[in-house]
Amino acid sequence: MRLPSRLSLALATLALLGACVPPDTPSGKSDFDALCSGCHGPTGKGDGDMAAMLDQKPADLTTLSAKNNGHYPGTEIMAQIWGYAKPQGRVMPEFGPLLEGDLVPFDSGDGILTPTPIRLVQLEQYVRGLQGK
Figure (cartoon, rainbow, N blue to C red):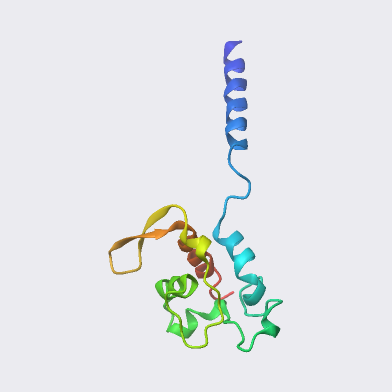
């Protein structure tokens, strides 16, 4: 009879610990929805609600690999989001909150692990997942 009570206690403890995780923990998708979809659209095709108000149509984020000979330009995407790469006429805002918080080791393909803000990596990975959709 003690086993079920221990099991119940363990399950109750897990449930309480699960409740400690904030429900609004940022993810690549949530950051995309909050920061990018207004211009790039909910599917990343450049057709967001704000797109019609801009002088330059937002990029179709689903074709980045196709426009780059099948190679997804992840590092360049992060540089664009970060604001480091500022082409002339850039209308995309800089996203400071993505640069705050924890850093994770990120390999851009050169074998060097570079400390990179986790939210920036998550957003880059989310955009990577939009390719070809």
